[in-house]
Length: 233
Length: 386
Ligand SMILES: Nc1ncnc2c1ncn2[C@@H]1O[C@H](COP(=O)(O)OP(=O)(O)OP(=O)(O)O)[C@@H](O)[C@H]1O
Ligand SMILES: [Mg+2]
Image (cartoon, rainbow over all chains, first blue to last red; front, top):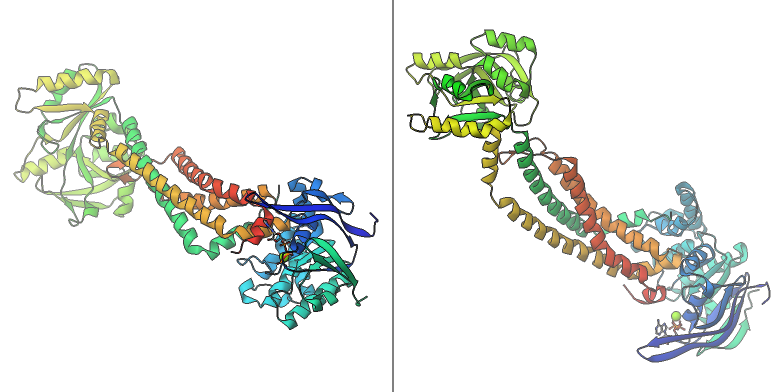
């Protein structure tokens, strides 16, 4: 593994068991995510894209093989140290935004900051900064149901970057959005990669979205079938 | 110490106001029932303990309202031999002050000042000067501090009470205001010279030379029981049959009147607490079920299983302690007041037990949801749609 890689999958197997049936989603997968790149993952539904993101972000662990981050084996960590590692290093963005409906935009963004040593005042400032970065400082007191889908997703991005993690994992972030909102979100992600050096892995079905990435990996039945380099360098 | 998102807990309660309110309300009711029940039982016990076992009260065997002649006093004294420190008497005057509204119907007794002080002086506080003045003034009276407040009377006020049991109108001047040292001594009572009311009644053609009860203060409570039997035996075949018992026996008899009621209420209280536990458990379970996805998100952000367990427990404890706390505030507010003829007594132990029950409700109803929430697998939780 070279130091230009942030995430490294080596011989990763993932098997789901349901009532005696085994489903081999990933078998011996090898994959590298380079530091500071914007990587797109494409492939048919059910091929294991979300599974890969979950493994990369330590939401789940492989059945065999190694997933490492900065050379550290994520699967070997205890549950609680993996949670702490996630809080420091990974920001998640979901298709369904997954904001907490009873909290305002600012409170949603400030939530992961509770896990940092920052004081309450510092957390406020940091949350405001993150909201400003996604252009929603004037919506900070709005609740999720008072925002449009595009705005909700931008708040979710602000929450993902609030703790300044090195890596962002986005699972179909534009899947529920109209074209214009999708474009804004993609522009934002690209900017975060270019200007703030975030490493981004994005799962998408949309070829137009994938075009924004530096590199696109195509997956089929848990096997990488094709890699293309985006024109956006 | 990890930081728990209190704001999130409060936000949930705000979002689901009705559910939170009903939960708090049910704990409030249950803990309140417990609190009042215990207050009543403790009140009975303390009333009993505060009652002087060395004071023996003799009255008519016929009823509480019948009279005994004053001429029994020397005979009683003789029966007590050297065991009594003093003997005094009380006479319930009744009558009407201002009008017949119940708030003006407080106790008023004719007494003999010197012996009253010997037998009951230890139960109340009053400046020496006021004792002296009252003793020397035939139409003087003293009143309790609560009565002074309620009727807005002060030293020098005139009090006119027209009699119904004893004819004639008492015309009294307030010469002293006392406070009680023991709760069993009422602060809403007036005392005046028996001589004055007796003469007045005689002049108006009413009954004279009678009292309601005699009280003897004994040197030792051990002498009380034999003396009681001795007195009642003595007057057994006289026209004035007596009933004699210690103040403490009187209270015990009164307490016994309630019989098994406290036990019945205790069982009822237990049932109510159990019903309350079901309400709070249901609330916390519903909360946990509705927040599966949110739990997944929190765990994704890096909140650990112990933190989420904590969060659920804190939420459950907050709801229950809020209800329990409000209930105990209400219960505490009756401390020292008369409650169903018993002086309510709310010692700190009642408050702590009430809060303890509330906390226990919180722990029991939060435990299973908290375990469920903390054990939830992130990937599973995120896949489930709310
Ligand atoms: N927890 C689970 N239990 C059982 N099977 C699962 C579980 N999670 C995923 N799977 C199965 O594993 C396969 C891969 O799932 P995954 O979510 O990674 O696919 P995906 O590529 O993200 O699909 P989509 O594009 O539809 O989101 C699917 O067939 C899915 O049904
Ligand atoms: Mg998926």
